[in-house]
Amino acid sequence: MELWLREQHTEGYSVSWKIKEIFYQKQTPYQHLAIVEFYDLGRALVLDGIVQTTEKDEYIYHEMIAHVPMFSLRQVETVLVIGGGDGGTVREVLKHTGVKKVVLAEIDEDVINACRQYLPVTAACLSDPRVELAIGDGIKYVEQQQAAFDLIIVDSSDPIGPAEPLFGSKFYQLVKRALKPGGAVVAQTESPLFYPQAFQRAVQAMRENFTYVKPYLTAIPSYVGGFWTFTMASDSELKPSWPETLPFSNRYYTPEVHQAAFALPPFVAEIVNK
Ligand code: SAM
Image 1: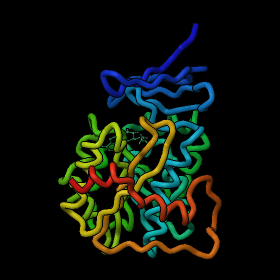
Image 2 (image 1 turned 120 degrees about the horizontal axis):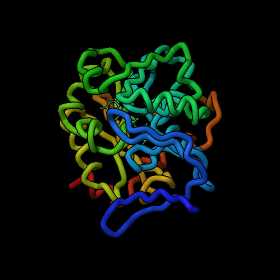
Image 3 (image 1 turned 60 degrees about the vertical axis):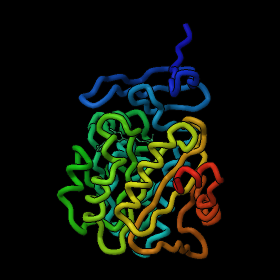
C-alpha cells in the first residue's frame, strides 16, 4: 500500500510526498509531530502535517538563517534561537568559533528529543557545552531578558498556534529589549507567493521597532512555492564582512550568495513596500 503525505496549502493547491517509512508519531501538547522518511528527500520533521525540514535541503534554510546575520555583525558571543528544535540553526551558529553561548528556546521538548534520535545530522550540536536548552514559550523567555544577546534568531513554525505571536509587533518590542546595543534579530518570514500577508506582517512588526529592516530571499525546494523569505533587523546599519576565506565549509552559503539574497524581485519588494 502506498502512503502519501498531502500538504494542503490553498483550496486548489496541495503538495504530496510519498512516504517510505514513518519512524515516529506523537500528539504532543502543542502539535502533531512526525518523523518520516520520504522517497528522494530523505528523513523529515513534519509538524501538524507541514514539512519543516528534510535531509535533502535543510542546509539551505539553516545556513541562510544563521550565516547572513552572523557575518553581518562584528562580534557575536551570545545567541538566542527561538523555535528551531531540530537543531539545524544551532549547528550553523556554532561553526563560528567566537560564539560562547547559544540558548535554544523551544516550546516543544518532544521536537528536540525526536530530532536527536531520528535526525542526528541536523541535531548534531544540541549537546555542545555552549548550548543551553530553555524549554518553554520563546516569548516568555524573551520577556525575561534585557541586553543579553548579540543575535536573536526566530526559527519558528508558521504563524498558527504558539508561533502566531512571533510575527507581531509586541514580540519585537521584547526582542529589542533583549538585544545588546548593536545587536540584530533575524526571522524566517514565510513564502512571498503563498503567505505574503504573514511576510508583510513580520516586516511591518520589525519596522515598528527597528531602524534598519532588511528582507532577503532564498530558494528552499521543500517549502511551498520554493521561494522563502527571511528578514533581518537592527538599530545599527549592518555591513557584512568576511575573512579572505571562510573558516568553515558550507553547502549553500557564500559571501556572493549572501549579497545576492538581498536583490528582491519586484513581486517580493511590492509586498514589503505596500
Ligand atoms: N525551519 C522550519 C520552517 O520554517 O518551517 C521551522 C523549524 S520548526 C523546528 C519550528 C519550531 O518552533 C517547532 O519545533 C515549534 O515547536 C517551535 N515553536 C513554535 N512556537 C514557538 C514559541 N512560541 N516558542 C518557542 N518555540 C516555538
